[in-house]
Length: 421
Image (cartoon, rainbow, N blue to C red; front, side, top):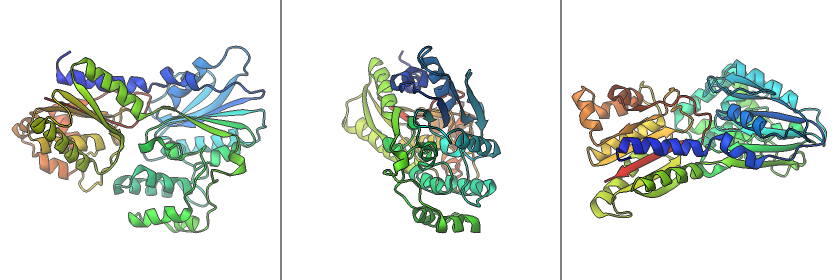
């Protein structure tokens, strides 16, 4: 395999395969309890996780599974005992809210002999939405939309989500007490913090409602009176040392670094020396693109920090501050910024979301080549204008360079790779 496009796509496919719940979940199976086993969860990978759990659950010596998980529309998987509910992402809807109410009821009234398995992955925060206090779903939706357009980091968004919720920030685990709670998590967040994945429904929280209010004020997110009043008077989330969380444990079963290492093996087999910059890079997508272009130029000009040919990989979650009226997408915005900065230098690159959805589009991302800019100009497009309008999806669609996978049924965040030389 010598075509750079094929190599990049093979690297991305390897990254996704390394995070497939069917390949990894069985290693983290808890022992069956004396009592009941209730399975709950939410996320873009939760249905696949439920399918993998049913496949690995012992045929003998264990009671039957039951429960409910919420996934994104179109991300369903066949399960025999665990109900799958589809809901909206990234802006929550009534289906997700109704299912969250049912999940909270499922885990209440359990005993110390019972087991709750919580399957949590990226997207779980929006999918399992249950507004706290007097906040309405419409008000929660508006706050969520404002945060998505603000450029706030995922950790900041989740602080707000936890303190506006009746189920996140450890509240799900607290509701299940005294049952044992085992969280199986697929990380899509920088640093793999369990408290950030899906807004940590099974993890104690140290932030306060005042912190959430400060974030909303900093990003100038319009707040209805109910939200402001709730944050002024709400109880804090259960703390990590809350007695109700003493029987709660969490295990990360797939993470960005593992996927990057799988992709690096593909690059090495194709004759490229790989280097992973990091699995938790953050920042504005277009700025991260400029930085990656600078690294590529350093290698092309000076042969440092790696000789050519080489592959530079990175993961994490960038952000986009929407200023235009284009189609958005943080991975494609990174890629368009990279292409502009490189301006025809011999670099091929890919940037995709491992869940198959970049932003609100059913498109994983795109590939750029040394002639990405010249082909766009020949087609009558102005790359700088498209970037200013946040229209990178439209840009790469016009070039035929989009990567479309459909739902991958996992989610370990963004995948970026450059082949240099």
